[in-house]
Length: 59
Image (tube, rainbow, N blue to C red; front, side, top):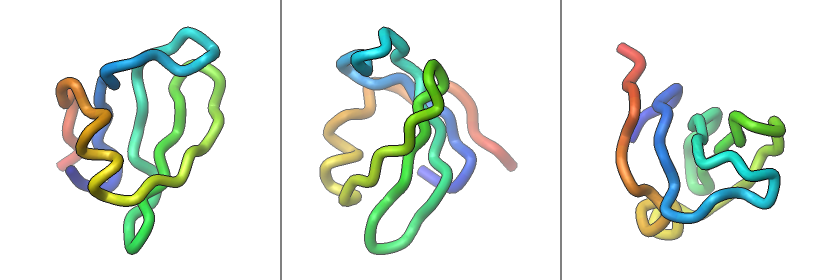
């Protein structure tokens, strides 16, 4: 996974959306919900557990 990638999560966000975009990387990864725009900060291992499939990769 890289900055700008869009993915589908295993469980939906409380707003009902299931798609996320990676907006920040480092020790913590920031992901933005594509439904409501909320940003969530996760550790890399937590993020890898939540990913169901990668939808698009930015080149």
